[in-house]
Image 1 (cartoon, rainbow, N blue to C red):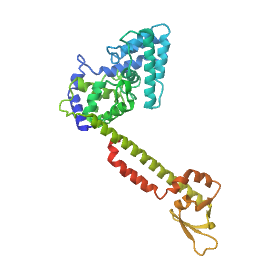
Image 2: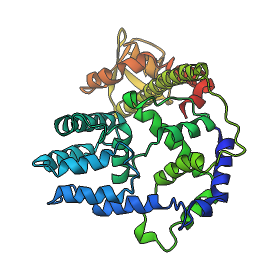
Image 3: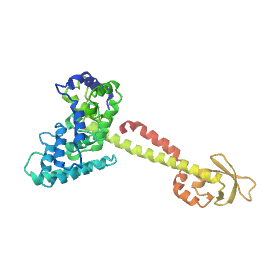
Image 4: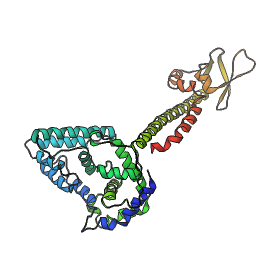
Length: 378
C-alpha cells in the first residue's frame, strides 16, 4: 500500500470533515446511524418477518437499494403468501457463523443469491428490478455485522485501490474474490490506525450521539466512508495515481504467488524445527529417567555423561566409552532407548531425527529465500 498517497487522502478527508458531515448537507454520518438502526430493527425470529424486513430496509437509508432495488424486492416478495419463511431462512443461512472462513462466506453469498434468483424467476420473471448481486449480499452482511464484514462500491473501491497501489484484483461480481477485497480493506484499516489525527476526528462524530450510532470499534464503517467520500468529494487532490497496467498486476500476482509458496516452505521448515526440538526434549527426558540405551552392534550400554548434545556411553568389552550425537544416533537407528514408549516416540519423531543436521539450515535457507518476497504477503 502506498502510505504517502493514503495519508494525503486522509489529510483531505480531515480538512473537509465538517463539510462532508454537515447536518443540513450531505451528512455522511448517516452511515453510522443507519447501521445502528438496522441492528435495532432486524430480528431473524420476528413473528411478522415481512413487516420487520420492511423496517430493516428503510433503516438502511437506500445504501443497499439502487435503481435495481434488491432489498425492496425481497420486502415485496416476503409479503407474498408463504415467502416470508423462505426469505427468513435465506437470511438465517447468510448470517450463520462461518468462523471467519471467507471461502465459506463466499459460498453462503452464492447460495443466498441463487435463492434470490429463484424467487425473482418465480414472481417477477420479466422484471428488470429486484435483482440481488454480490454487492447487495455483502451489504446485508455488513449491516448485520460490520465489525467482521466490508461494504463494497466497486468503482469507488477501485479508485482507492489504484491510489494505494494495491495490485491484486478482486474481480467482477460474476467472479468476485472476497478474500482479496477483504485483504484490501484490512490493509486500508492498518493505515487508518497509523493516523492519530484521522482517528481523533473520527471519534468526534459520536459526540452526543453515542446511543444512536454504531460504535464502529473495528473501523469498518470508517473504511467504507473513506472509500466512498474520496471519489465523491474529490479527496484525491494532490495524489499521484499510478496507471497500473495489466502487466503490472500480472507481475505482482506472480511475485505474490511465489511469496505464498516460499512462506509455505518456511512454515514447513519451522514446523520441522519445532518437532525436532520436541523430540530432543522428550529423548532427554527418557535418557535422564534411566532408560537403557541399546546400540545396534554394541548391545546395551551405560550412560556416563550427556552434555545436552552428545551421549557418552560405556559398552561391555570396550576399554573406553563411545560418544554419539543424540539426534543423528537416534535418527539413523544406531541407538535405541530401551523403553516401551520408544516405538511411539520414533513413529512421531523419526523423520525429523533423520534430518536433524539439515533442519536448521533448511530454516535459514527458507528465511533467506522469502526475504525478497516478504513485502508481497502484506
